Structure formats: structure tokens, C-alpha cells
Length: 225
Ligand code: C5P
Image (cartoon, rainbow, N blue to C red; front, side, top):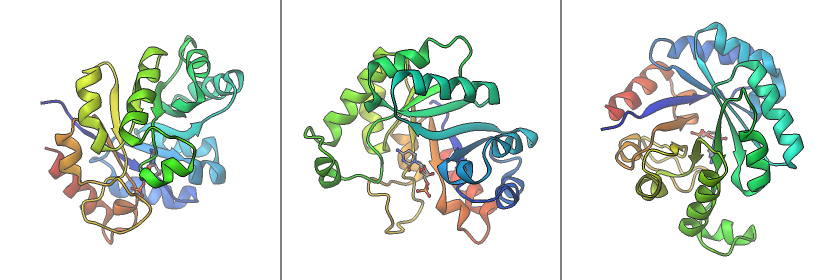
């Protein structure tokens, strides 16, 4: 069976708290996600921090802009040495191709439908096809235009695994070892994500807000075995 890796989201606002978390997870977690919360506060220093501790960075800034602008951002991310970046697949084929063409670039992980969306939210945002169909269409767009992976809920991952069998990595946020009743609407447990075929799971608050983040991560890794 394939391996499912854990990516810990460093959704904190200072280098100090990020480093504190990295130290608690050191040895167990290899991949760290830097998103808009930490990056708007600390910038590229956050990337350097993860690298200093020997981790790999998923830079989750969810780019969505005209092709030339996103290409420039991905180029800059490449100079920081990050492992992967996220961009919205709804940014379109030209935007994806402009990034995929870069000679030296991180892995391109395309966002399908955010895991905080349910059918109602998606409809209200102007997408009329429903979650399953929209995720499949966007994943195909990514696959045809150079994406290396797609970000989706494990609820759709098993279907994408069948459709793209190994061609696209599947990255799944919305992971909840226990129900929390928060903004993640399409949430499942780590074991369910693994069974659905996820290559990576992204976990934030269940680790960050745990009394013992190291133990929370260890329990999640236990479920992924
Ligand atoms: O705290 P929680 O486990 O919900 O954190 C999930 C992380 O994954 C957040 O940093 C969020 O921005 C990110 N993410 C997501 N859904 C996506 C892509 C990224 O929740 N589709």
C-alpha cells in the first residue's frame, strides 16, 4: 500500500511559536506547511526556519492571479527552495502552464474545492456543478496542464486515485482525529484519509491546539501506519 505522509500546518503568527512547534514535532514530522497566516507575519524567514531544522516546506499561499504574476511568485518560491506550492486550479490552464514551464520549480499542488466548503457554499460561490463534479473537472485541468498534485477532501480522493492512478499526488486537509465542529465541513479521520488514498494529509489545529502537540502528531502518525 502507498505511504501517507503528514504535513503539519504552522498556522501561527510568530517565528518563535513556529519554532516551538517544530521543536515539539522534530523527528516525527518532516513536512511543514507555511500558509498565509505565518507568511504575512514573518515572510521568507519562516521558510528559512523550517529549512534550518531540516524540514521540507509546503508553501500554501494559494496563488490565483494572471499567468505572469503567478509565474513570478512560483519563481521566487523556487529560489527559497520550497518543496511545493499551492495554486487555485480555477486560475486556469494558462496560469498553470506558465508555472509548469519554469525550469527550476517546486511541485505544483492545485486547490480543487476548499475543504471548508459544502454544496451550499460552493453553489453560493457561483459553481453550479456540485462538489464531486467540480473537483473532478478541476483535477483534470490540473493533470492536463502540469500540476503535480491536487488538494481535495479525502471524500473525493478515492475517486481521483482511480482516475489519475499515481499521476497526481493527493493532498488532503480537513483532517479531524475527533470531531471539532469548526470551519472544516468535509472532514474525516487520518485513517479514513489513508484508506481513501491520500499521499499527504495536512493537519493544523488538531496538532497546534493540542495540550501535547508531539503526542497528537504521534497518534496521527500511528493511524497512518
Ligand atoms: O487547522 P486545520 O487542520 O483545519 O488546518 C488545515 C490547513 O490546511 C489550514 O492551514 C488551511 O489553510 C489549509 N488548507 C485547507 N484546505 C485546502 C487547502 C489548504 O484547509 N483546500
